[in-house]
Amino acid sequence: MPKAARKQQKNLIQNIAVQRMWRLFELAKAEFPENPERSRHYVRLIRNISMRNRISIPREIKSRICKHCYSFLVPGSNARYRLKDGYIVISCEQCGKEMRYPYKRLR
Ligand SMILES: [Zn+2]
Image 1 (cartoon, rainbow, N blue to C red):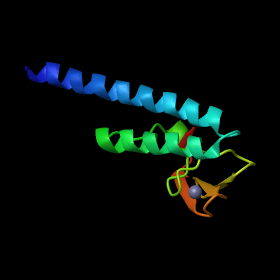
Image 2 (image 1 turned 45 degrees about the vertical axis):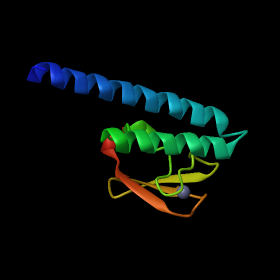
Image 3 (image 1 turned 30 degrees about the vertical axis):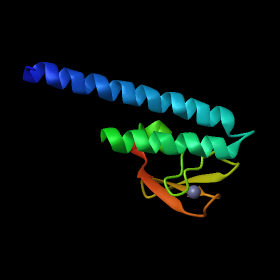
Image 4 (image 1 turned 90 degrees about the vertical axis):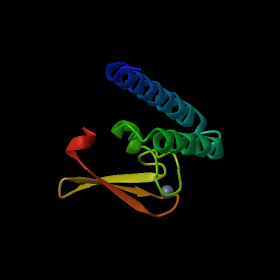
């Protein structure tokens, strides 16, 4: 296969993987109020896709899931968001751990 075509195919696979992550994210969001365990399962699948395809999770998704316990995070419900030194610090009240991401990159 020519090099350009191979690259194109790789992009295609990555696009599909990202789309799948968004779909799982929507499912996790929909399931969270009624069925938090199932939403956690969807979050775990998002992580799996990211690792298997070696692509990063879109930042909008990343800021709504706990990378420690895979909880779907809802501000004011099971998570706290605050800004500190240009970072957004997310506290997961499910497992008590914190994550921090550079604020600008989270929009
Ligand atoms: Zn957590």
